[in-house]
Length: 280
Image (cartoon, rainbow, N blue to C red; front, side):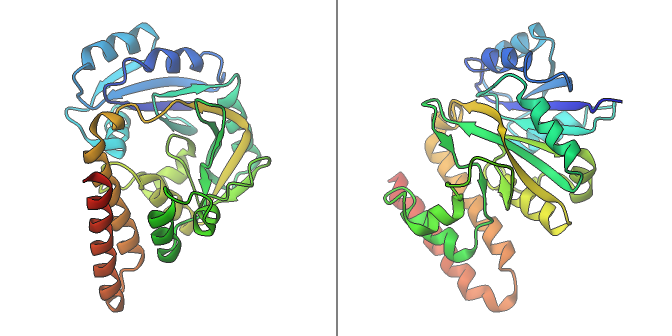
């Protein structure tokens, strides 16, 4: 039997970008068995529902803004059929022809892989660094401090592994903007940690998959275009706070031993200071 893929996209004020996303799925892969659009109760939820149903997708109301992982969980709670793979993807994405089938082909050829991510292009056609190393405390702090003002700093370059974009390779984690996950691996690690409202849930998933013995694989011949964080741009300060809270959650849990308590305090104070600086 051919592999079956369940596509889940989480929407919030996404009605402007959703039509292009749904249209691109038509040529993205014969392996797509079902598409679920889960809405996090934004003001244009009724429009999103109409667009989803008109395109043949199933619509799920999350019953509130449950964040990214919470939205995916709301969608999966309604699923009764079995699928080989789960494709979690942002609604502001457009798939190149055959992109999903290329991800599935890689997954079938690499049974030790738990997640698979495509080459992600920006709206301008640049390659977005989407297959990254897991952030250490040193790299994470340096990337956080210098990533925006000095993009070519060595810590950000190491974190993003920007130069390696032309072949399949293992990564510490793959961008949640579009990631194909083997359902057996997803279930083994328990899916996304719902303690993350937005951001770092993909980092945490890649980390836990790796700890469980699965590999996270970058598949550059599968291509998508990510037009941008449309909904997040509407609530910049709230999303910045969510990003900093998630960064602290991830790093503090990675350095959770009692003797790291002073380090966790410094991390918390540093993130608070950075949040104040960029959102003042």
